[in-house]
Length: 331
Image 1: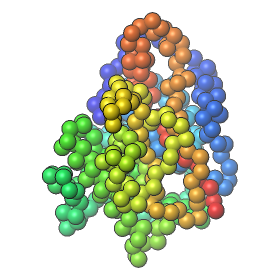
Image 2: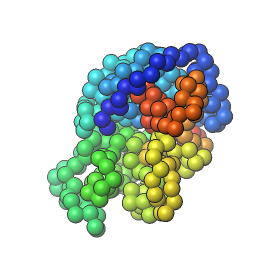
Image 3: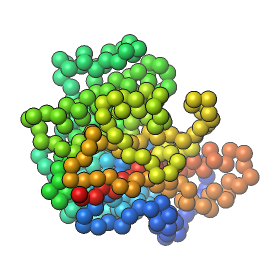
Image 4: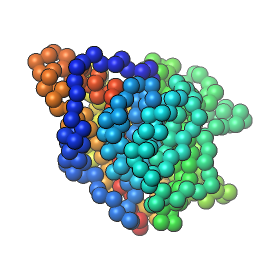
């Protein structure tokens, strides 16, 4: 996405106070403590990370959240990866990363993982369909043809306690909500879903656990949503959020099925059919914006556009997306 405008507000926060607020919300939202036999998987769109002017303390707050998880898919790491390198230093030596080259909107995708808990395997790739398969990505009612992804999904293979995982880190095209742009998003979703089906069912691959996660720009987890419908048709099972918290900051209210809503489920963690050796347990969204920068929230008290002003600060210095996580247990 285009970079957000830098907020014009005189405000400084206390890092220790904000860290304490995050820790208290972690408990309230039920994020488990790490254990040897559980794997905490998350996805987080970091919103133009490297293109907006994050300060050192902002990066420390982001690292605080990321440190609660074992394996994280990250989207929107921009061409300038200096802030990402600072983030990795803040996370410490236990964490390793792999990331892609830049693609659409000069964005990279990355994995961050606890290398003492998770091993990598040989396959590191992108989903890039050969020309002979492009014509097979078509949907009734979508007139444009599929010419490939704006950002090729980033595929990496891992093992946890001997259990194989193959992840595809996805950030699908958005553009806007016109019919043509939604159609393009549907085609990208179909390409991901067919890839997951084909690789899980291939006699040449041994991938029992194919997981797709990231920013699918999927507004609503409802049967009539054109993106969600493709997931269902091709056997992609998504985690069910444990609360009604959306994965993006509240925006302007929009109509969906005749109801005014501002809860969006853009970010997803899904798996093809059934997992083997693992089962997904608790899952939730971490709404850091509900506790961070309370003094700033109070500063805007009485203003009609209070939420807009506050969110402008949050999305610039932290993100406009919230982390989505799931607990995976050995079985």
